[in-house]
Image 1 (cartoon, rainbow, N blue to C red):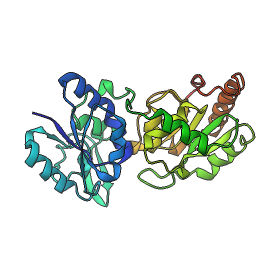
Image 2 (image 1 turned 135 degrees about the vertical axis):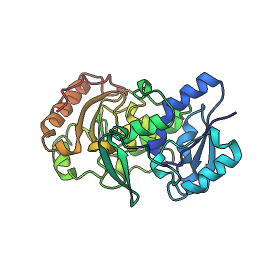
Image 3 (image 1 turned 90 degrees about the horizontal axis):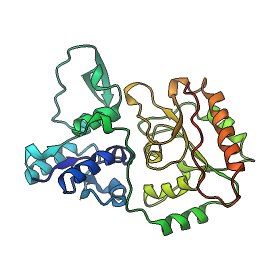
Image 4 (image 1 turned 60 degrees about the vertical axis):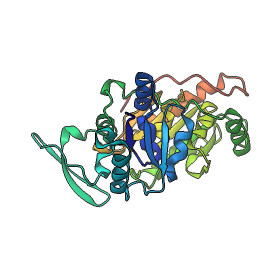
Length: 299
């Protein structure tokens, strides 16, 4: 019987599980069904190995309805709910050691600390995927190169090396050190064309891979862009949320700093920007895809 994963969104959470769904498709010869909210369904148009079941449900407010619909269609035993914290029927396992108190969407729950060292790892575990595979790159095998090329040419202005920036100030992992980080980045505006991805409004989030493939670096907070960066070879500097709300970096992460260490990591940010600029200066002016920068020490 086909497996159904109830995973309504958002974009970043869907990208997190792509390597696991690819493994399921390869092992079974069948595309796993993913129930997804229409609001975020376009993310799954970028892959061929998932069967999207698009529903007009809110990504967390209608999770109870989503489970009922899935179990009616596929049977309870064939339904998996990776984001268990959004599932109103979920009962946390017994707490044997230290407990962590969570408040998610205004709901408080107690969970064993080992279950929440990273929401990404917890989601991966409850999807039934082996933890050893969590670092694998997400694969988008249905990209549109012509559309990506057009968007890149239309939305860029100079021949300078491109530096992508995404400093999320809202959402599920708001970053409180934007002015301090921006101050460092803006000192490099004569060297790079700085592209703020927070202002980018593309129909398909995975089209940003076209920008990443053509850019020399990326500075991002813990948001969907961090997960997307793991799907390509771009060198990136990641600010990762504190505690269990922090993600696990994939791909070519040069430096990862917890939010709490953001100010102390500013010298590392400068070293990262210097390194990718030095590398880009050795390339021909029209070179689109530089090799990844060498990793730097993690603060």
